[in-house]
Image (cartoon, rainbow, N blue to C red):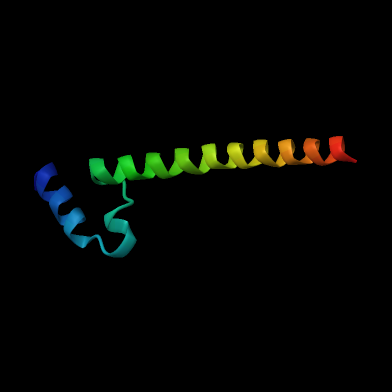
Length: 61
């Protein structure tokens, strides 16, 4: 069995959210990378905003 046939069978077996987030297809890998970076950067941004808000409250007090 060739590599392409194995991948085609794996891709055909994907259901639900696994169609969009998988390690079999290039698009699936891209979506995983985008989701990972979004979570990392979103967490950093939220922490930055939380610190700014805390500093503003202390300055007002």
